[in-house]
Image (cartoon, rainbow, N blue to C red):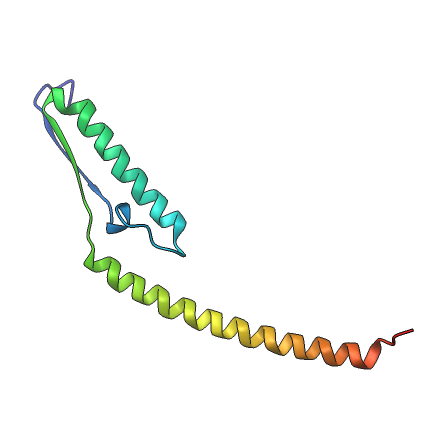
Length: 102
């Protein structure tokens, strides 16, 4: 675009988490923050060449995505806690049967 001297437009795909960090998806959030930063830097650098750089940040999709993640994680946590409880009970019984205190 710069060599052709005709200008142009660059549009990046971002997310609403580029503005509002959400827990449990740090890697995803950091990539969106980096896209936002790169977009802003490129916009400043290439403005003299009549190149506009923008990013779109959908939010509604994130709400659905967040709900699905919440459902998955809450199921995993419940399962993990249940397994941990059973493991602790098993270890307690094993200890009572096989360990003797001197």
